[in-house]
Image (cartoon, rainbow, N blue to C red; front, side, top):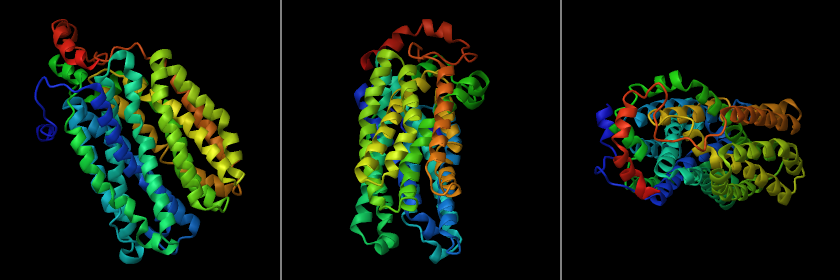
Length: 467
């Protein structure tokens, strides 16, 4: 199977790609994948409950069921991280990125084609859950490969900045999905929106995949992975190797990602339900606020990445987590004002804080693991926590909302708990900026030192033009 998969994305030996081209390809590719993934979150908040579940469900039960299927995508993400991480550490980063893009595009397009519960009954939620699983499976492999392509091609003193480019895919995908859903929700009547308007953003995803594939097929494999192959330090079973040698780093990466992963889906998915159910406000107000907030996040991420190159990953990362922890109550106070301007003013600083975390995150997690298990280690740390953080966040927040009489303070406390987990985990992980990224994982260095001394010219040829 490895041989078949390995044929995807093959390229001429010795061919190189500029870091700008690689970073751009990583950004556009992740933007398309996150666009597809976020569409489901917005749809879960707006339409999936009444359309794909039994009409016997109460409105609350239908909403919770929709958010439960939303979780399935997060449950699949660690599985995707393990599978794609295994082949990414053995075959290469590029091939996996082509596969993840194809799987995501097809599954998202098919969501837009699904008949509803009124047409096919119980098969509607079954097929919906299956396609959501495939979305999560693809995203599980996407992030690790995309950030490694950017960080492993970049010079060590710009790793934070270029590593932030694939991180731009999340706010870009959010902007695209919010724009389209905002447009169709305004353009179509409520009846037409429920009948077919919500399907349009899903169907359009098939158009974007062609652009993503065209760009990704042009980039080359990373110098770090080429060096791993030349030094014959490819791990036989990367997931076993990373758990044996880097279990602490996997757990700390998971904890460090808790706030970013969990609070993001509170502020971009749950807040739509909160505005509709608790505040009785039009969803378009919150979609527009999220759109502006995503733009703020987009601008913050590369700045935070560049700052991490100068001051270190940890100070910037901790600043973002601390900012969100302190601002959680004021953010909900502004949202509860029911004033559109203040709601936008609330969402924007929330996503600014997340941008401070996301900026250095790619380089931070990249530097926690050796080159021969990095895809598996970074993916498992990043995606593993998604089951408990982002996947459950809208569900838990909705439950808290109804348990505590539609008040926001329990949700604010929930977010503060996430912030504490991230602050502690990132602090224990420590600073990583000075780590050399070409070295394999400890315990997996057989023959490395001997081979590495004879490969300095080869390494320079691979990495020199990209600095």
